[in-house]
Structures are given as structure tokens and as C-alpha cells.
Amino acid sequence: MSNRPLKLSAGFMKLMKSHPYLTSAVTAMIPVESPQVDTMSVDRYGRLYFNPQWIESISVDELAAVIYHEVWHLLRLHWKRMKNYPQAVANIAGDMEINDDIRAEG
Image 1 (cartoon, rainbow, N blue to C red):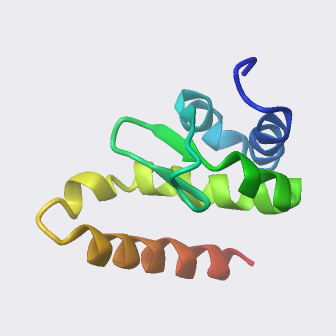
Image 2: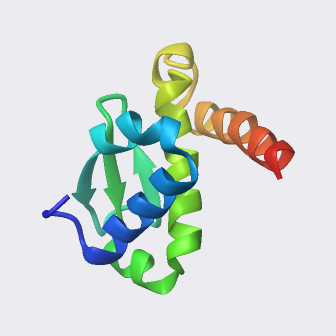
């Protein structure tokens, strides 16, 4: 995790501590600094794109929650299941699927 900004590493560690069963998936993600993304996103190859300024504007708890959300896009194979849909529609549908389950977790 040495190539990650310290705060991003803290978000990863917080998530792995609270959800140890996701450790393999979380550590397999490849962080890519990208000021072109507003917040954070993930692609089918497990690259986690993040805006460094945005990361600095949120808490470590919030960051861990967003990483948690992004890892579920990978684990649910959204890139594969939704490849025949417009990207914007697929992203909204995937977000809704993940977020309702996160809310149900409490």
C-alpha cells in the first residue's frame, strides 16, 4: 500500500478491519490517482480511480464506506452483467443495488 496516499491507506485499513472477509478483494484493488473523476470509481480490472482533492475533503470513515461501495461493484460483476446497457444507466442501477443492501446492513 506504499503508493497510496496515507488517507486512502487508512480508509482501506478501516474497511478491512470492519469487514475482514473483504480483505482479498480490497487489497487486489489498484489505486489510480485521477483528478478527472469527481469522487471515486472502479473499473472491471479492479482499478480504483480516486480524486485526491476529494479524498482530503472527507473523513476516513466516509472514505472506507465509499471503498466498501466500490468493491461491491467488482464482487457483483456489474461490469459483466451490465455491459449491454448505457454506462450511465448501468451505474445508477448498480449503485441502487449496492446502496439498498448497505442500508439494510445498518
